[in-house]
View 1 (cartoon, rainbow, N blue to C red):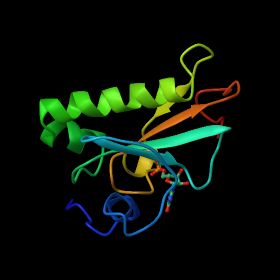
View 2 (cartoon, helix red, strand yellow; view 1 turned 180 degrees about the horizontal axis):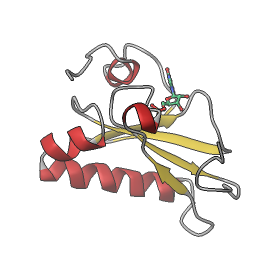
View 3 (tube, rainbow, N blue to C red; view 1 turned 120 degrees about the vertical axis):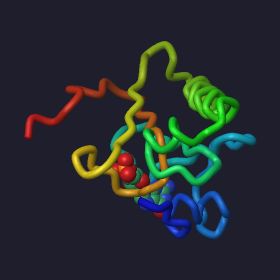
Length: 120
Ligand code: 5GP
């Protein structure tokens, strides 16, 4: 599968589409999810053309992989989530229910988050 350069997160990265950005560095961009599922729902995306978790691990440089993880960690601390806790989630492919084909990590927090998976 080829990376779609016009997916919505690619356009947000290029600043063609606005987003409520909370953090940016050389490796990652973090912004509020447009349809939040928790009081705090941030998306962190790596800078580069990566479709999914597997694509990222297979293609990203070690520096980018570390930088991306550190950006997630930074955002967790920006929102003071480290004490009460949070959930990290990434979806991949059809069974994962991935909607946007640019690798992203969801950060959920701000309330007890309930069961890990729905019962359906
Ligand atoms: P996925 O199912 O791919 O893991 O999650 C995609 C997420 O991106 C969803 O939670 C959805 O609400 C969010 N999203 C989709 N389009 C936009 C957008 O244009 N802006 C922002 N900020 N979030 C978006």
